[in-house]
Amino acid sequence: MTIQTQPWLHIVGIGEDGLDGLTPATRAVVEAAEVILGGARHHYLTDNLEARRIEWPSPFDALIDTLKGLRGQRVVVLATGDPLWYSVGARIGRAIDPAEITYHPQLSAFQLAAARIGWSMADVETLTVHGRPVEQMIAFIQPHARLLILTTGADTPAQIARFLAERGFGASRMSVFANMGGAAETRFDGTAASWAHEVPPFNTLAVDCIAAPDAALLPRVPGLADDLFQHDGTMTKREVRAVTIAKLMPMRGALLWDIGTGCGSVAVEWMRAARYARAIGIEPRADRRAMAAANALALGAPRLELVDGLVPAALDGLEAPDAVFIGGGLSDETFAAAWSALKPLGRLVVNAVTLESQAVLIGLQKRHGGDLVQLSVSRAEPVGPRTGWRPFMPVTQWSLVKR
Image 1: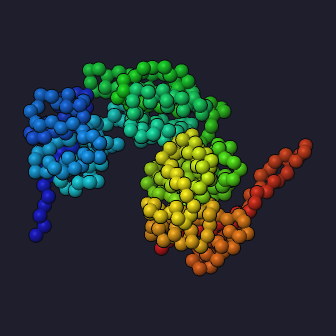
Image 2: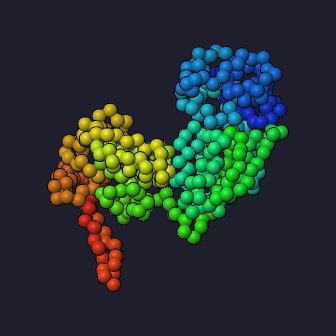
Image 3: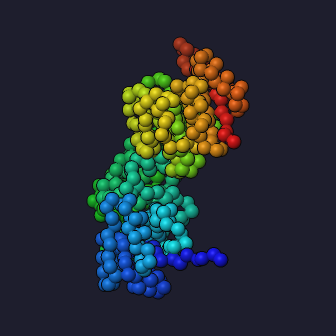
């Protein structure tokens, strides 16, 4: 006989209108709670209830242990808007059996802002930089894009306005909404180039991206221009990089090991290409790690993790990857360590330029299979008063999937 787990934890979305905005059934759940956990603002919105009150724990990671210690009581967690949309509900649901939880969604800040400005939710990108690096929104700056962003404080809209203006999107229209649904609801409108509003710290930002004729074009498909990266000349060139990323197959939340990361061009493009994609760059040279970090910030991949060390030793203890790119430091030992750590269905791509690296690569391909191709790229450049083809060194590329 299967014993059914009964929900004891209710995660309730609440808006600026407090209890009045809840459905009768949800309001009854909150009013019957023995314990209510939430932020100071949530407690203020429900201050007429007699339940025991608990503030968000510090550090916040202690939240799960706090909740587990309350099992057996009638517990309500209050969250702003929809608790499963960039909110605490998803975090709790990963740690506590969902069968023990009942979710009570409320209109999210995204939905309220879209309604205020008249945007279709199907046609916008929804982002959060709340408690996260603001630079990650840079990857979404594109002509005609519409962005709804949960911000991290009063200064965030001005910071995003600067990102837009620096990239040729200064004409972009911006609207900040605060206290939506409450008596103190406010709205601030302007453009990125002239943004000067002082806004409340808890706000939602809408951006209608408008590009100038000379705006930087930064698509999320791989193949960004080489001159968008700081580099010392040693980098995976644009055309080869596009093929490399395609073989690595970026996917949502997937982790890349970029071995011999150099200026970070492959890792950065991997992270831009899929939502929440992550990368660890292994690079022994401090100057190149500094360039990689700067490129990651400038191009919207601020969570690039950089490791100082020589392979294969530097790979010990790293989280198992979904994909591995070896652009430097190729050896039989490095391949063996990376291949052993790679998850099933993981993708491995190796680029080699020197004859010595190509010899190692060809030997590996004979033993393990996979696709072996040679990529040759020439670019038209001035030759005196005329134009000619200037070739780059050919790249031998080996790729395979772990089955």
